[in-house]
Image 1: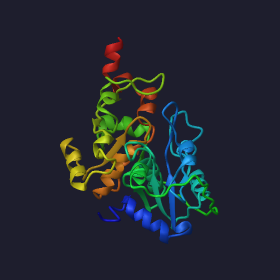
Image 2 (image 1 turned 120 degrees about the vertical axis):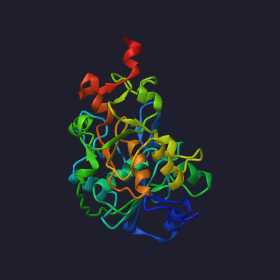
Image 3 (image 1 turned 60 degrees about the vertical axis):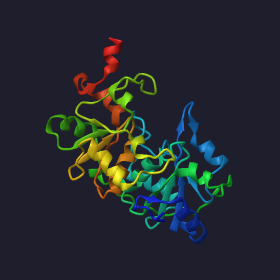
Image 4 (image 1 turned 120 degrees about the horizontal axis):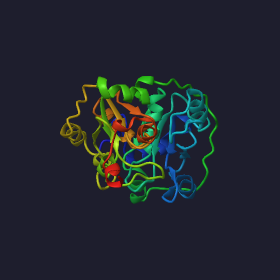
Length: 294
């Protein structure tokens, strides 16, 4: 297996060796496991065991704290301060993983955040912490101490879509819109997590679940398989593409998959279904859930 699987992915073997030879801010490893009530407490899990030298990247902390929506991007200055305090500068190679049983769940969101703020040298650990443990590689509960670094962030607004962009696209069809949630949540036959929001999708969006891109073992599928997944849904990677989900997290898995195929301009609708559900016109929300409940 190639050590550098793509510019977006590094193998477990690569990281294991790199940790033996690279020190300081040249390589920074981040655990982006998330906190979700009744499901998992990423920070607690990190404190119990993590890859040696890794720091915890809290997606719920590194966001727009003033937004009424779930996980919106922070400002340039807030992101710069947050990652700078993790000992990251603009020359660091940042490698991100999470501890989800799927292999890669939250790490692609953190990867995309770095990308959208202009950081080129950022990768996701293919297979995640699940497979790091499976290989019997070292873990620790020791807290990693780093010296704060200066970081400069510049937001690439072309890679972020707002509510108004999605609303306009319903008639203009400037870009393809793809929803990365499960088919049941997309159609509205499966409940949407959380209160006060039912499942469904944005009018005109296609469905391609993010889990389709992962093997049962938790690794990213091959570029050939990724290509086929997009092709089977009629998605043209030579044309503008925006991904949506519940809150802009799993959507980043598809952005990363398209990046692996050389498409670097895939955008994310940051507010995703959570914002759309609350703001969109009724006829712009498609759901079988309403029919069942009416």
